[in-house]
Length: 186
Image (tube, rainbow, N blue to C red; front, side):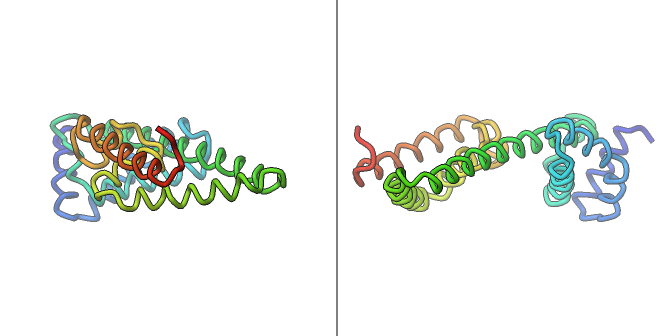
């Protein structure tokens, strides 16, 4: 059996919910997926998380892989790279947040700024929560998880133009609310 036939059969079995197929794919490609993730993240724990995430994604959404478009091995490596880059972005955002939060807590001269910032965060959070679900989902992926509009489109399974549009409309709605609350001036 050729590799292409094997990939197509794996795909059929995974779509049918055959957990033995997932075990076989894991045995074949988990070391490679982990290696890709480790090279991108430079962190063993993050690489392990990415590896797990890739195979959970394959199990939960096997239809995302199309054997007509390429080898399963390549698709898994591409997914591992993408998820590893996302992991790096999240770690960078967390590090910036912790550095900012730590500086705010330790510097007594900035207590008033911290209180103001906290109030503004609540208004922003409230404005985001009132958005229609499609806009909120796009905005959360882009600004809270660090995804590009292309990644947002891929994650939400929508065209890139739709992802851009949803993010633009969501940001305009949030800006309007922040203007009404006096947080920003136009």
